[in-house]
Length: 165
Image: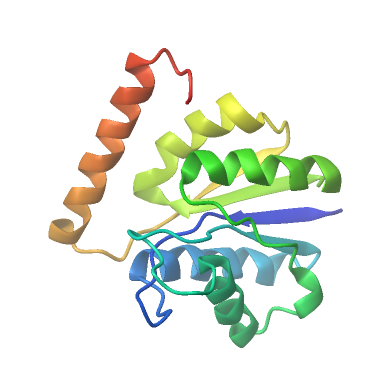
C-alpha cells in the first residue's frame, strides 16, 4: 500500500524557525508516518512575505524538521513551492496524479480543515483522501485571528459560488 502525507505549509520566521502552527502539523503528520512506514511526505510551502521571508522554501524547513525526527530521505517527494492553500492543491495535484497513492492523507490545522476540504473538493477531488486535522496548540487568544481569517475565506468562496481565481 502506497500512501502520501500531504502536509500543508504554515509560517516560519526570517531565520527559518517553524511556527507553532507548522510544528503542530508536522508533529501530527510524523505520528501518522510512524504508524504507516509505507508513507511518503509531500511538503508544501514556498515563499511569501507573510509566511516565509527567507531565501529557502518553507518546505525545506519542514523537511529538515522531519529528517531530524527520523524520517528517511527517500520518504520525501519533491517540494510543492506554493504560496497559499489554493496553490497547495493546484500544485500538489500534479504530483498526486503521477504517484497515484492508495491513500492521500491531507494534514493541516484543525481550524483550517473546513476550507481545506472545500478546496480539495474543488481542485483535487482525489477519491482516496483522508483529512487529518492536527490539533492546534495555540491559545484561544492566539487562535482567534486565524479563526476569523478562515471564516472570511470561506465566506468569499461562498460569495463566488466556489469558483476560484
